[in-house]
Length: 74
Image 1 (cartoon, one colour):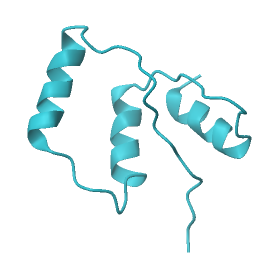
Image 2 (tube, one colour):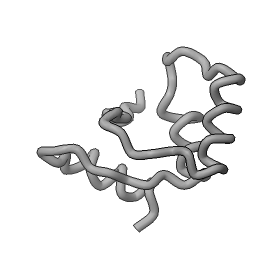
Image 3 (cartoon, helix red, strand yellow):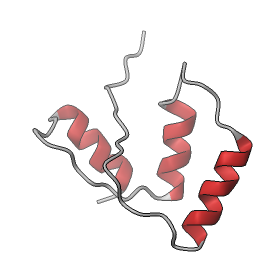
């Protein structure tokens, strides 16, 4: 199941515990463009560092989470 659909599924029926979802580049772009409103802007140097770490397989699973809430349209 694509990551974006997995996220939506869990927003509709939230799990009782954390869920690990591997986020593909397209879904990451959607999250940053549409679900990151009102958050602080990304720091270009950190983005570059993260991209480098991921490309070199130095990106590991931690206890840090990304939290979502359903999008509300007015």
